[in-house]
Amino acid sequence: MLEQLRRRQELLEKGLSPYAAKSMQSKGRSNPEESSPLRTEFQRDRDRIIHSNAFRRLKHKTQVFIAPTGDHYVTRLTHTLEVTQISRTIARALNLNEDLVEAIALGHDLGHTPFGHVGEDELNLLYPDGFQHAAQSVRLVEYLEKNGDGLNLTWEVREGMGAHSKPKDDIMGALDQQSITLEAQICRIADAVAYLNHDIGDAIRADFLSEEDLPKECKSVLGTRHSQRVDSMVRDIVEFSWSASGGDTPRGSDLSIAMSPRVMDAANLLREFMFRKVYLPSGENELGEQARAVIGLLYDHLSRNSTEIPKEYHKRGDTVPRMVVDYVSGMTDHFALHTAEDIKPGITAKTSRWQPW
Image (cartoon, rainbow, N blue to C red; front, side, top):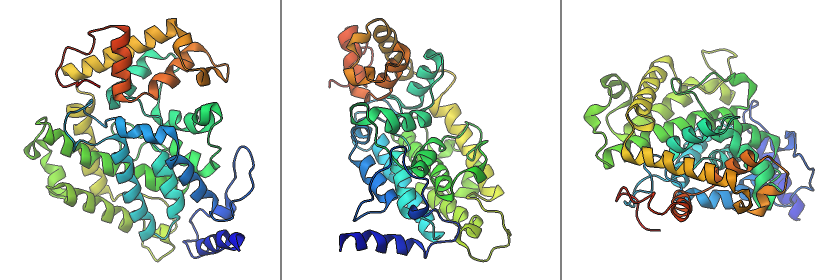
């Protein structure tokens, strides 16, 4: 009887868009496993991600503002849930695979550093091979989770997790959209919709910006409130990407998830504004400078004292710099601060915005 439950789920997928990814057609896992009697392959991946240690740590990694004292600032976990919600809304509207979209969205930021964009930028400068959090998310589920054994996720979920990052000046990025599943494309664009809008809210909450500071061109196209901007973007994505649903469309056979040129231009302008004013400002504030100092201290200290890196990171015989990056990128904000304070007492005492752990 239980076997029939999974097959019923797989049969339901046949009613999806002809362009949707189907779990029965998955390219599979690196290590083949017996199928679950209850869940499709993508549903299993979703559950593995939710039960992972890396997913739990997201609640203590802040999105933009470092270890804030307020209760309502966005964390990597709440960001992930918002991306998941937006992704599923788009997938359902376009009749694509919600289970695959959900798994990708839940896992897309597992490899992000502490201290948001500043932490990622500093680790990228320090590590000779460079650091990119999307690639680290894939590395984490392939090799680092479960004490070094990995989660053995399907190819489609790992592909989507690795493809979600965009360059600073383009919400769609240089990636060939046709090379990834439509579900991966959904998560890629939903990520930008989510963080652009909630990061504006956090910046306003922190008195870092006001609504009046936002570019007028963006407000005229997207709206003047959080809910208006999200709704404008999501509706535009669904309408402009309607061909992916298998329905009639004036766009012919062009299958991709995208925004209309008008909305995309406004979103890109807003994204460039946020990178310039909030994410990586040219004149960094005290918190940003201290975040870089903490990352630098941890990288230097652990590079010279690799025995302090937990044993599961030594399991694959990686180089010391690689193990340092894996360990530091997985830290929460407060754990990184606590560890840095143990190494160099007083390094986190320069600002009252960091509270005792």
